[in-house]
Amino acid sequence: MVDLVEFYRENGYVLVRGLLGREEALGYREECHAVLGRLRKTDPTWGSARELAGGPTELRHCHDAQFYSAAFAKLMVDPRFTDVAAAVLGTENVQLHHTKIFVKPEEKGSPFPMHQDAPHFPHSRDAVGAAIFHFDDAPEEKGCVRVMPGSHKNGVLPHIEEGGWHLPLAEWPLEAATPIEARAGDVLFFSYLTVHGSGVNSSAESRTTWLVQFRDPEAAPIDDVHQSRGQGMMLRGIDPTMRVN
Image 1 (tube, rainbow, N blue to C red):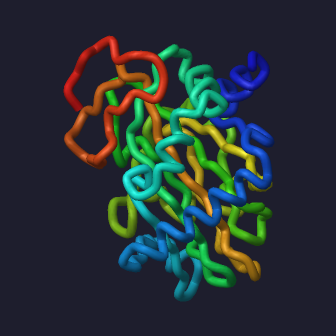
Image 2 (cartoon, rainbow, N blue to C red; image 1 turned 90 degrees about the horizontal axis):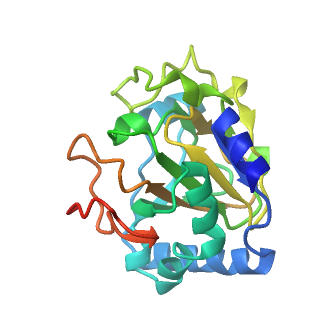
């Protein structure tokens, strides 16, 4: 765990291989697609993503998946996950911010331009992180996550609001970032200050992930933005602030 934390602090991310078993991950993949099949279909693709892709693309998603399937409520308090989340935050206490299912459909799955998460929900302390659970394999051709190692050390960068709160496309090309190819069961942890994005899924299979955004409960939201139904739930430990979220 020490090496993992040191890598995270230096680079702003760490990929934990095999946090879930492969068959377990594929089971969650089925659960993701079942949840999406029960919801009204919406496409959250950013306008800037369509510009980046150079044509029409598609993305499927679901906020707060734990309210639609108990499987996700169980997974987000699993010690295999919360112990790593606590370690990278440097605290015994881990609090939920929000969750999202993201599915990039085959052949036309939408990309995400390079961005930080911090401008979407700034906090008083930067002890805020994310974990992307990979429920199927995510090679580069499936539009895997790409990161800029060490970019979390630069603080919050100015973003372009139009088209999805992204960094300037010409200054932050997706191709310049490091691709984080993953296998089913791998989990990518990264700081909300780490610059990241993802490419188009041009493969013949959809890419299925689940995002859990988490924080130290002593990192208070600065603005009343990005509310979620589950925000403030303790995933590990206690909330010493006793703040009403």
